[in-house]
Structures are given as structure tokens and as C-alpha cells.
Amino acid sequence: LMRSSAASDVYKRQDICNMSVLNTQQIMDILPHRSPFLLIDTVEELQPGVKCVAKKNVTMNEPHFMGHFPGNPVMPGVLIIEALAQTGAVAILCQDEWKGKTAYFAGINNAKFKQKVVPGDTLELTTEIIKVKGPIGVGKAVARVNGKVACMAELTFAIG
Image (tube, rainbow, N blue to C red):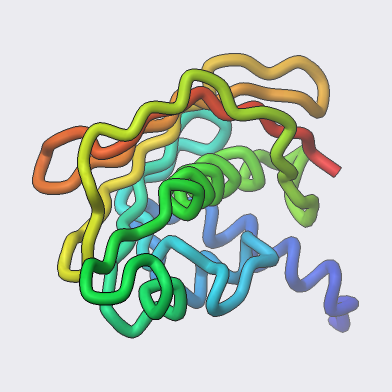
């Protein structure tokens, strides 16, 4: 039995989405992002269409630290937001109706940054899908370091 590569990719995603913990390669089977813009390393918990918990190990090797800020490396807030969005995208794109699609930003509301994120930190990223109407949805997103909130936001996405 031969399948097209597109059909095979969707089949692969379906199998992956039924797993509870995903590694980087499996995340890349769901998301179109690649280095240096893939900002989640592992998925620790996945409830398709409901919630995703991921981790990002922040290292000094990341290119943004060369200029943000020399001698005082701080992960840019927009990249923390992007990591949260990628976490939510895993939850949404694991739903049967959205497999093989891309989740795009449509809005960021009530973003708050509570503490710096620096090399050596592990970000725990949680995005819960709180509303979906057709191809538009909203996720409640929280990033923590050592259990303390580093960032929170409401993220709106569009599936295309």
C-alpha cells in the first residue's frame, strides 16, 4: 500500500498527537517552525484542542543573546510569547480538523511580564484553548520558571 507523502505526514501527526510526551522531532512533525525559530523543546502534556504543556530550555547559544543584552542576557518577551503560541499551536493542530494546517497570530491581549528569563532557565509553557469559533480561537497562556510566573497573555490565532 503506497501513500502520498502528504497523507503520510498527516498520518504521522495523528499518531504523534495521541502521545502524551513529544520530543523536538515529533514537534516538528506538527509545527512548520525550524531552528532558530522553533521555541519549544518538548511537550510534557497534550490534550488535543484543549491544552498543551511544553518546555523550553533557555541556553546562552541562542542568537538573540548576542544583542539582547550584551553582558546581561535576557530572553526577549516577544520570544516568550511566541513559545507560548507554538505551545498552543500544538494543541490546536493535533485536532483532526486542523491537521496539516498552520496556526497564525491574530492578536495578543493582556500580556504581562513578571520576571526576566535568562540562560539556564527552563520555561514551562502552558496554553489552554478557551474559545474556538470556526478557524479562530483564543488561548490562555502562562510561562513559568521554577513555578513562578514569568509571562502571561491571551493569544488569538487563526488557522490557515
